Figure 1 (tube, rainbow, N blue to C red):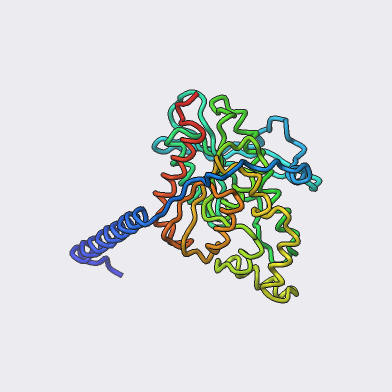
Figure 2: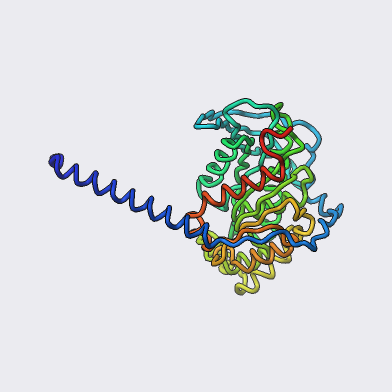
Length: 347
């Protein structure tokens, strides 16, 4: 087949350019509308502080490597960009109850310029996908002067071939992975161990809430589009992976959605609703979506309530359409972390 004539190529390039411009303008318009319609609420003035973590709950997230600096098993994939540099690091940790350790995968983003000891943030990815949102967040934080450690998923949360008890084990693994990432961040000479925060969206937001409850070194947390009562979230979510998991559990003998919810509630004592009272709401920001059916909005509201009604931002969006407001979310998250932990220049 011969190449199209020059005029046809020019027309195609013009059409692509026009399409890109239109998409950019639409995204900018959506962002402006979102900023205008987003609603804010301050911390509940009646908040009296977090509850102490009971010893039996702390034991669920204890790991034998605690107190020992982690050995870096491997380091690779060095990259640089405007204002940041990154590398992949692997360290080991053992999930409570497991016989052998596993590898924790950390994508570490550091500010490109040296500048004394800086705050650090643990970034938790969403349920699936290629970690694009968490990497974008980490790069944004690094450009602002933070160290940002994206802790990748050790395994999928959802496996329809396994019973609901597996959910609890995977959650505990996710949290000890993040605690070990904090151990590793503390070994970096330009990280201030007194200024560690955490941020995550969706499943990453659930992990962030749990981490903030059980890890006292986390001094600030931003919980984005996360809900409590995992049984209810799983039973009602429209997210395709969650729907597939629900169908697989039904095929394996679960009676119906209500039965699935009851099974999850019984099998997962580490639900974010149960651990939320141990999070310090004074050091927490929640970002919610007004019309979410992936993590249903009412489950987000329940988690916000259980956390002690911290300062919040409610987006005029659903779960996926909130992506149009990602610049706003990143700005709000970074601003809160800067105010709560002290900016990169603070000593």
